Amino acid sequence: MPVDPNTLMLVYYPDPILKKIAKEIDPKDKNVQAVAKKMIEIMIEENGLGLAAPQVGLSWRLFVTRVPEDEEVGIAWLNPKLEVISDESEIDEEGCLSMPEIRGGVRRPIGIKISGHDFDGKKMSAQSDDFIARIWQHENDHLDGVLITEKMSAMDRLVNRRRIRDLERAR
Ligand SMILES: [Zn+2]
Image 1 (cartoon, protein in one colour):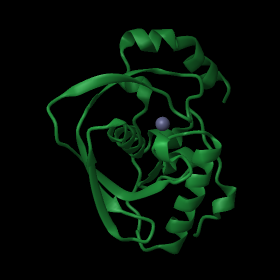
Image 2 (cartoon, rainbow, N blue to C red):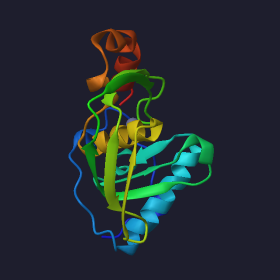
Image 3 (cartoon, rainbow, N blue to C red):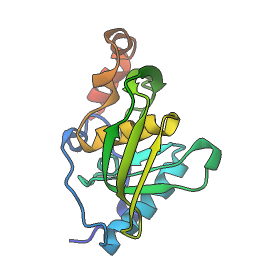
Image 4 (cartoon, helix red, strand yellow):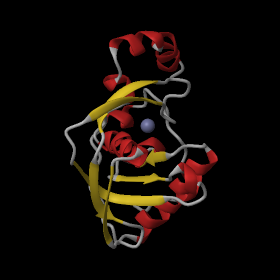
């Protein structure tokens, strides 16, 4: 059944959809393309740098990103595949639109190659060792049901403990 893009809303931890492994989608499907465009609008409204389909309640392998220098333009990745291309990793602070007010350091590989499809179902690929590579990994984690609280240090989890509990109670 087609999804009406105008009904999409952010979902928050601990919504169970955030823990599911998302399914591949048909990159030529016009409904998927309409959803991706709407997700870019939501990402910009919410001031995010990335947004994955499970965060709007859809268990689809799709995420959108934007780079800070290019704020009003978003890119969609349909059925993305990531490949680590560097041995180095680093810790940087991350937040998540589905976990408001929670921030913590997450260690990730620096260099990433991404391939997938764009809005129009065209194949595309890119690689980066910049901040966008971190965003790709954060969003791709959402497609595998993984959240930043599972990747941050025990110390950072402790710092965010009360906030995590408040989110769990809010449901
Ligand atoms: Zn997130």
